[in-house]
Length: 314
Image (cartoon, rainbow, N blue to C red; front, side, top):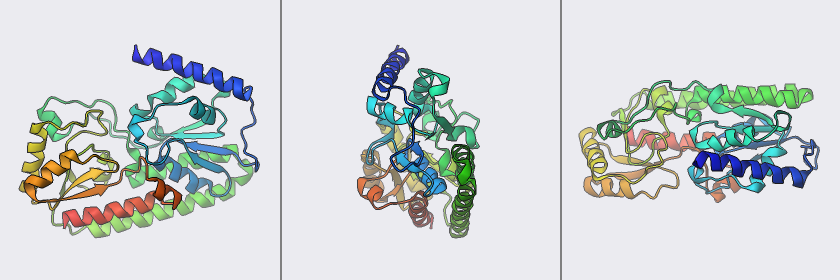
């Protein structure tokens, strides 16, 4: 019933957008540049890195907004309708994208990059150690594909390929931007490997949602988390908090992690009992208004994450 209502609402939105725009095919902005629209911050950063000055790149999710609480508005549907290239994750938390596309005629849909299709995904059921004990289950592939450097490169390739089809006369410029972006990813990945090579510990404890599966797999880290992926259930049970406390003590972890915009309630309970610090790992779903205005990049956030990981594993 909820999905049916969502589809109906999406159809109403598209009808409204078509009335406002007279279903115009003119998608370029006033400067004559094509419009690239990305759903979350990670997709936005990859898109702007590849586009450079060739296109106008914007982010659908307002800064400082929790990505998993986003609901499509008529205004946002209009932005998607006029985009030349739409870059989204395409995972479970963005089911509204598929409803939106299904409500549009094929010729009206913007060219779309689905990151989860471009990336290499985990193809087995993913269940945290705690949730396994409590009977929890996660059957969808983990959608946080951009936390892996290899996947960042794959997504960048897909964006470049599709943007070059939108702007064939700028293909050489886009190829140059792609090469530079991937080279920066290579440099940061090498720094991760160098700085984490001699770690004293191998397990991170996350008293929060866990959108870092691909990151930990890429660097051979173990983890225990309160919730798998970005579970909608973020009220930690006493059993979950107790398990995290035991794990912090077992591995001698100096810190427990939370993600951006966390209420930190679970982490505070663990820290109170163990004396460990609370540190942040930014999943790059979104950033603060100040970070966005200052032009923070995905790689800068990942470098901050490396500093935190190095401190917690030393």
